[in-house]
Image (tube, rainbow, N blue to C red; front, side, top):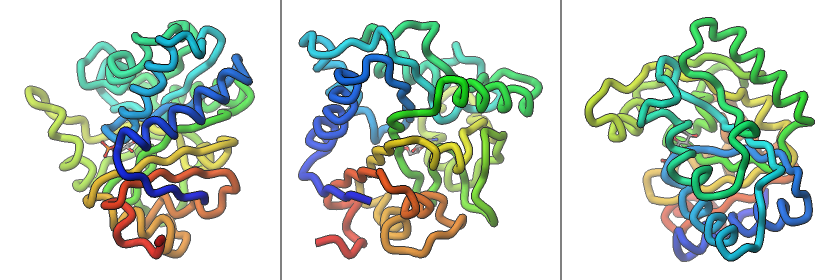
Length: 243
Ligand code: GLP
């Protein structure tokens, strides 16, 4: 893992956004993996800024998002689809037909997950995947468990994840299940950019970087990936052995 400790969230956003934009400039047909949550928003802001300057076009890229709540329609204001529209997709020239999402409304979760896993394979895999990390070390919605997961699947969310994400559900009940890309699929992405900020992430970041590789901290599996950039602020890096 290459780790960079930055002075501010906006500095992280600029660095992470630049990696992604530079890649798309050189590879206009890139396959990009996106994540939701507060952590990647400054990176999305910097991507939008570069797009508005005319520096990059997303017309030919294909996108896949990591996860979606199970039981929420994509039109719901708290769906991850809505999040991506609001924070990135509506502000750049990505083609709607090139945007791929797990369908949270699918009644047959297993076949929906199979469809999504196949779509990622058919696209040739993901070139760059943006990731955040949960307080318990989850990536995507891969919660701590006894084994690392494989392809996309439906997961029961833990109490800590429900507590962290419930703040976004003011007037509706947060779903208790989600569909997510599996750990194996995340490991198959050719380049991973993980962003973590704030003291609340410090223990998860320590376990990811300095702990042993264990499914009890799903992000620790990234120690076995040879192309990961981790962007941290000082608070998130506070419990690691990084200078
Ligand atoms: C959710 C998402 C994750 C994200 C995590 C952290 O659980 N499924 O993909 O990494 O939240 O979010 P935040 O960046 O808001 O702390």
